[in-house]
Image (cartoon, rainbow, N blue to C red; front, top):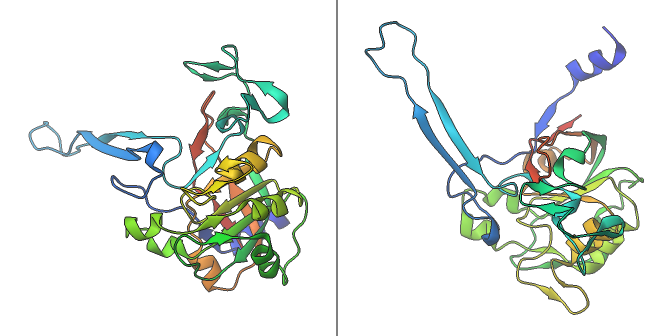
Length: 256
């Protein structure tokens, strides 16, 4: 075996995806998040011992643990790189530029910034991220994950959705470090309902996605990673190649 294969066999894989089910936490604009219905069941009387079951899975792109494509956000009707939102780009079948199908597999050095348990509705500042990064170096091209502690509340939808989020200064601080992507264990990276006086709602989406071309991964499960004191790891995330999509469900892993 190669050295890489040997290293992978020895590594521990941390699963960073939250379970998907009907009624799971969701941003209000992405309801209903996940629907699964069996349309073929194990039933007697088929004439043979073997039976089969399969289901119909329906979910929004931004349900559960997912990544935002760059076309997901625009500012003054322009997306990242100055691409205008017009009928040639935004079609009824999806986007012809910056869609989910343009996201390459994310394989990068990962960094965890653990903020402990952040109070509900708390706005996380750049100073808090900087303090959490004192024991780890953030390099260009990293994937930076931020734990607010709300991932442990996934089964309590009301509590999970009341969690805090980043303010504009936190997103600016990270954008300046040029990560490949950022992610958090809350609903929407930003604080839902907070309106920045300069940027409006979801300021981090404007600063990171539109202005810097940095992907955001939301609703991560970071409890085991943080509990084991892991701060640096190999990060692997494979978005679905949905042509023209604005986001994709993902099952990211951290390899240590």
